[in-house]
Structures are given as C-alpha cells and as structure tokens.
Length: 350
Image (cartoon, rainbow, N blue to C red; front, side):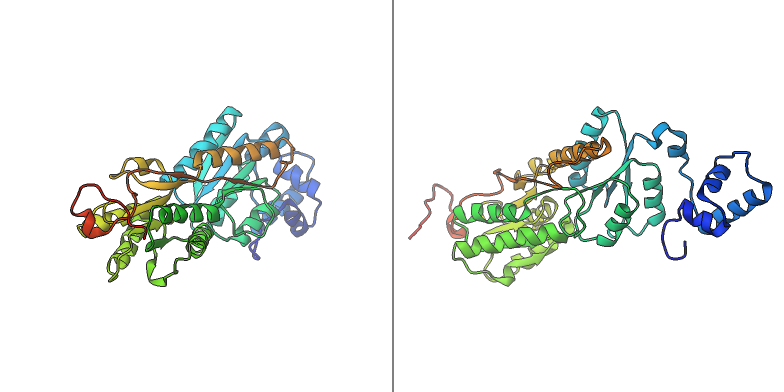
C-alpha cells in the first residue's frame, strides 16, 4: 500500500469493486466466480501488494504452531541465553520457534511482514523505545510479548528486570568494599539509563560526590568498554573501581586496565551486569549483577503460550529480581602504594 500499511482482504475488495467473500473465493480457486471478475480481483491483489497467508490458510483453525522471535542480533550471549529460555518452554509446548534479526529500529518491514505471516505470535527482544514499530505489530492483531523493553508506552505484555535496583545494588556493593571513586561505563537504551540512575542514587545515599568525569560511554560493546575505560584511566585521579553497565563492556574495561599495566582487582576492581556465561570464564572471573536471562525467556514464552490459549495473565508485566554474583574481579579497596608491597592489609576507616 502507498501509505505503508499492510494490504488487507478488504483493500483488495474495495479496489476490485467486489465483496471480501468474492476475493476469498478467487484466492481459494473456487469456481463460482466469472473469469472477468477473477481477473479484476487478481489485478487488485497485484496493485495493493496483498500477500496470501498460505500456511495459515492451509491449516485447520489458522494455526502454524510457530512463534516468531525478533532480536537485534545473534552475536551476543545476552540474546543467546534469552533465546535458550524461550526455546526450552516453546519446545515443551510442542511448538516451533522462528528467529529473525532486525536493525535497531526494525526498518526491514518485508522481513517482519513475513514473520508475522507465518507466526501465531511474536516475542520481541527490544532494549529501547520503538513505539511505532510495536504499534504496527499490535495493530495487526498478532499476540505480542516484549522482553527487556521499558521505553514503550503501549500496554503490551512484557518481561524485564529491575534495572534501577541492579544499578544501585552494584554501586552499594562497591561502596561497602570501601571504594569511593567509582567509574561508570554507560551503555545504550533505557536499561542503561535505569542502571545509571541507581548508581547515582547509591552515591548520593552514601554522601559521596557524583563526578561527571567518572562517567564514560561504552555502548554495551567490548570495544566501547575498552575506549570508555581508557578515558577513565587517563584521569589524574584514577577510579578504584569501575562499574560497567553490561558484561561485554566490562570485558573491554578489563582489557584496557591490563594494557595499562594495572592489576585487577589489586589496582582497580571491575563489576559488570548480566552474568552471561563468559563472565565466569574470563580472567579474573568477573563479578557482576546477574539478570536471569534464561528465566526471562521462559517467562516470556509462558506468557505467550497463555495468550494463545486465550488466558489473560494476572499481570501485563513481569519484573524479575537481579542478584549480585561476587567473583575475583572485585575486592576491598586499598591504597595502590600499599597493594604493591604485598602482605596483609587492613583498611583504615578513620
């Protein structure tokens, strides 16, 4: 359609000057339609770009037993763990899962149209505000569940974690270890903004000053974390700890610290957010705030399966708790000159 809408059976009928029943008869190859009318309908189909849902048309009840999953990419363990949780529940229900990657703003409408065409419902792993595209999915009448999406004002079912509390939990943990100059590596999207808010409020509650120079943009990527850490490591007064808004950027932070000849955690403690599998495999193992990615996928799948059965969930939003996972990349603060001498050290709290 010229206005960008997905063409409907009614659009075809209006252009051809016939009823929707006649259009349906033509598309299903029934013989009770004249050749002239049939040609007029097929011309209208071509002009409107109407696409016939061949799979749904051929199944009793119009079900394909397939759920579509839209993710920004498949190159991160973050997405992989969510998809693994989705698949675990969906397979137990006897359904199939079709995964599609899309750009940040889901501009690939033809790809999304196809996914909608062959799916009974869609699970969207979206980390930022995309109200227009979400509204398109909702308007088409397809059941939709979102994961890790706080930006939308559209009341669609969603699963996420308490990102604000996770950010505050991380910062309070570092403060309890005696750290006062705590760097923060920001990421993209609403989740990072909430974690940053938790970071700032934890500093405020501890009566520690917030310093803009201790905040750098890491873009939720390892190279971004590396660049952000270098900004912080070029400060005259180095941070004693760095909290990265996700594990990938924390890996970049660790790389930058090591490249400067500093030690983790003796010189600088590092804390991430997510607890992807790699967090326990890097050296030193990364302390992090765990968000239950696998369980988020499971919860979203259960919510979708309930909707397909016609059961409304008790709540339209499920928010799961975060958890501190303490590993080897963090330790109690001590003066760097003392840390180089080795031996036991007692924190001077005076």
